[in-house]
Length: 411
Ligand code: HEM
Image (cartoon, rainbow, N blue to C red; front, side, top):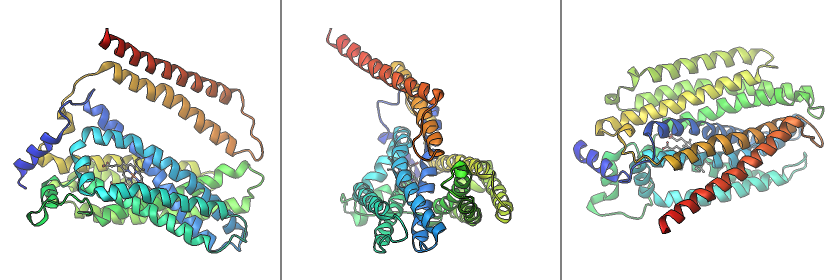
């Protein structure tokens, strides 16, 4: 399809009712809400792989402990990555609705299959988690774990396909009508980019390695996690993270080479910033690898989170470059200001999300550092009361706005 027709198609597919506030707000939120999603993807995939590998060495007490711990990390991590995927999904489909929906329809069977494979994959992982206790855990559960992890990989790949197909609107009609016949089955995966996909997998290695070092630091106050075990975890983490960071540099170069030259991604400052940042990460993990990383876990994890932030911006820069030839800029999206719903939305993020999120994170952080029963201190209790009150207020406010609108429409 030629450029002018593709541009016209993209603009026609946009929601004619527009969006309720400035598109830049949605774009920024889309980029930054994706960061927690991908971090939990990275930690979960890494922890699941480590949980399985350590399981095969469970005759050694350190590996056995690590297998149990990482199996649990992946169990919690997957549930969080799913929840945290919702926010970027809402923003993507708001400002990039033509791209997201067209891509979803073109591979509809895979999108629906995503739900089922994620569900059975998670059930398999959960069963592996339930049975993975002690050095006498039955060997067959390993295959349940492998199946669960394979499903998570497949789901990540489906996510990648959906994101990537959306970048090629000039090919949609051709994919929709192969050989001149309409194909409404949605059975095909039409395009993928292995280097891009590989980059996110390598990122999982880096982030998981950094997470493991931080894990070694986090539990140092717990008597039931011996210092030798924690040092073992930290050492392993620093080796893993180094390998991941090097692989990321290689795959990023491969990814940039694969992007059409006309998009000029090599001259974009964001590409260089990411490359330099990854270089710093490689250096940091190279230094950490040779020394005792005790006390450096949080610093290295923060450095890795910073990398995820840059990757998120890079992805968006790339998407803007892919869309530019078709004159598609989210900043031109039609806006129909809806101030009350926007204010409610912001208050929800700050009030309910901030307070409740803050409460849960503080609670989990503090409770995890205590073996046995955890007794909440005054600050955590106040945060808890505050977040319940904010939620109650939010529900009351939500209902009040709804009733007010309903009454004014029927008055
Ligand atoms: C095991 C399950 C999952 C894995 C491994 C996974 C992994 C990934 C990866 C690797 C990407 C980047 C793809 C790319 O840019 O090429 C991505 C993007 C994304 N994921 Fe996930 N994901 C999973 C589940 C979910 C779920 C359940 C949701 C929603 C509730 C979600 C929402 C998103 C969104 C919105 C994007 C960005 C799409 C875009 O910008 O076009 N993911 N995911």
